[in-house]
Each structure stands twice: as structure tokens, then as C-alpha cells.
Length: 178
Image (cartoon, rainbow, N blue to C red):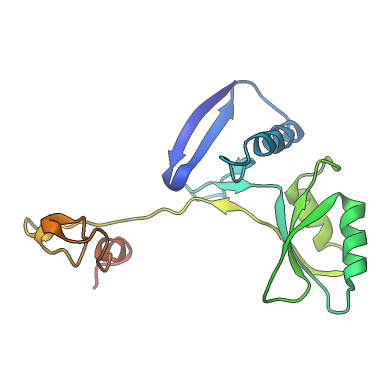
């Protein structure tokens, strides 16, 4: 019942259902897919594209939370348990900041749960952990000698080492000077 809509770099695929589904159904199906195919699928979720953007954001079951200073680990554990949320990992650099995951014990998705956490008086902030597509832009000049200039983009030409270069086409994809 899935149709491939678009394939992005780095193994990101966007599918659509053949018939209309509720958000809760999509979240449940996404959780099932990840649960059954953990060795192949890192994330599954519903897709949203912000206004004036062409890059989709994938809403996973994860969100990031910073709890207020003085919030104990017992309070955090209890709050997470009451909300059907589990800790994926603590932030190694920021005390009381965590990557959390909404579990099947709740029907809420990560967007709603992040909003609920954000409104609570024991948190500083909370936001979804979106997965986005990185759009690598390159500009390759029409210079007939460009392929001889291995230091710009080394593909192993002339016996060189693949990718031993300065990735100039990626820079030129952003700016080419004045």
C-alpha cells in the first residue's frame, strides 16, 4: 500500500499511502516498521515540509528536552514514565538534557509530546528531533581542463587517491565569489 514519492541522498526515502490515513495510524505504522527492521531502518515517521521549503522534515518518535537545574534524576524518570517516554541518551555535554523517545505506551506523537514537555514547569525547552535531508549542491565548471585539476575533485583520475581533494565544487555550490 506504499508508493515511493522521492528518493533523497544518503538512503532517505519518502513514501505515501495509497489511501488516506490518520496521523495516529501513520505513527503506529512508523513504529512498527522501525521495530521490525531495526537493522535496515534508522528512522521512520511522518513527513512535513515547512512553508517556502523544498526539503522535507521527518518527524520521528524522538525529541530533545532540557530539564531545569535542580530537577532530580528521580523526578525526570517519574515524569518520563508517566508520559510513556524513555531516555535514548543523555547529552554528554549538558546536564539534564536528554534525547527521549515516545514509546508505544502512549498514543501521542513526538510533536505533541515535545509540546507537552515544553509547557511543563520542570523543563527549559523541548523540541522534536527532526531528521532532514542534506542537499549537497555542487557546481562543476565547464572548463575542459577541470578533470585534470585533481585537487578540486579527485575521482582517482590518473592513478590518484579518490576524494583526496579540497571539495571545491561543494564550495562553489554555495558561492563563486563576487
